[in-house]
Length: 149
Image (cartoon, rainbow, N blue to C red; front, top):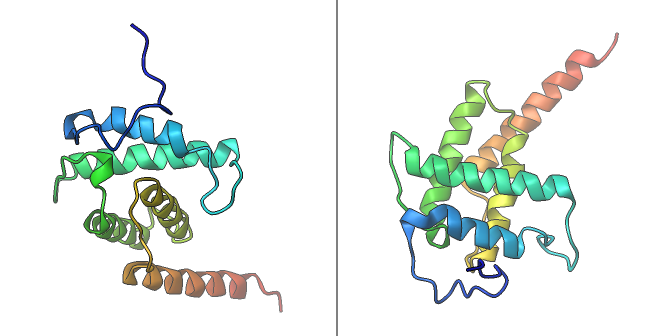
């Protein structure tokens, strides 16, 4: 028996199945990942791959996180999950394991993903605003260090 075409699978009628999160996520990615976030055009291969990698990492992180575990279907992704991710990324940036400039990119990918599942992340979280401030100060410091006298 052949696999159903991901473009014809009706995700609205498919029941929420946290144990099949990877299957559901792959259906969502196959259907939407080629699209630009706001324009009627496709995206490049690097963007496509980066989004897919981040989405897979996000759901593995939420499932295996030692602080708070979530057994969720990707269509159940919401703001509380974003808050946990933002807190994690902020702590990683403070520890020097993640460049602060990476966080807005990750947030943009999450915002795009939530549009695909019919949800909206409108406001930039307070954590991201703080991280942007940290990034500006960091870049100012780097630029000042490179100024020759």
